[in-house]
Length: 322
Image (tube, rainbow, N blue to C red; front, side, top):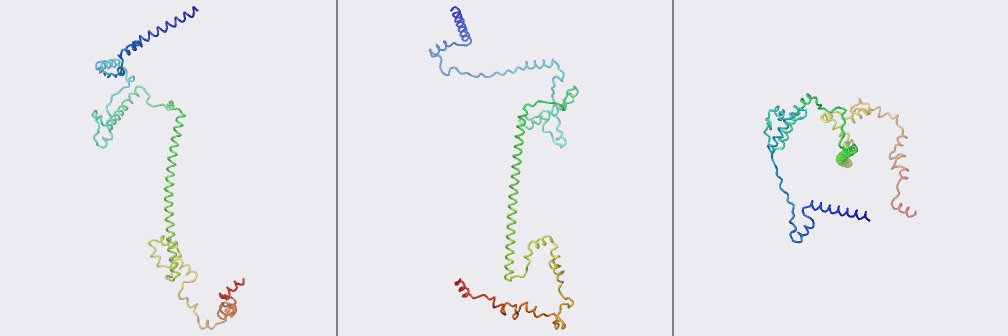
């Protein structure tokens, strides 16, 4: 029991010490706040945090003193690597004979392009001056061939990025191919429609020519040659009129096969001797070929009567009997 009482006393002392430390840390204790609230001293909206304006101190003398301290150390250029350069000369403007827009210090801060060009040319001048100094002090300016640097992103992430880029490229290629195919289909359809219309037009023209020939309105059969005639006309071009003077291929072929027409030295003319010569005449052959009085004739003889079609009334009777 003595041990338990001592432990309880030590716990109470620690709790009291903790409360005292909290009261010391806080400006007002809970009891004081309760008393103030009971008296009506605390009202809503009284305790408001107000941001105080920051005071900027421009200590010029202190900054100058710091600069002097830096200069006193007199470190070598290799340790400092500081350079102050004017912008490099604008070679393009000099070659073209133009006046450079940016001089040594005349820069319009509001002009973004002029300001960025000034920085760019100033960096050029710094590089031109710094590279010889670095090589003089033995500082390497090029990365060795066997240099290995660990990338910020892992190989897995880079593979994902690569796959995504490849998929985008494939999608673009597919869309371009689809676009070309659509254009080709449109062009092919247009050409097909033109060819069909042309064929229909040619067919209509040929049918009209056939009808005219059937009705006896014309005796020309040029429409039967079709595309061959057109092909010849297109290949001949300006020589078409010159070629018309001579015979065409069809005429030449017939001339070669049957002769050239005209007088043939009287070889096919009937003479008195040929007219009186009947040695080659055969009556059976002549009658077999057909004639009005011949056996093989259609109209004369028994053969014509046997092949005669019966009349309409006879045919109707024959149908009714059947």
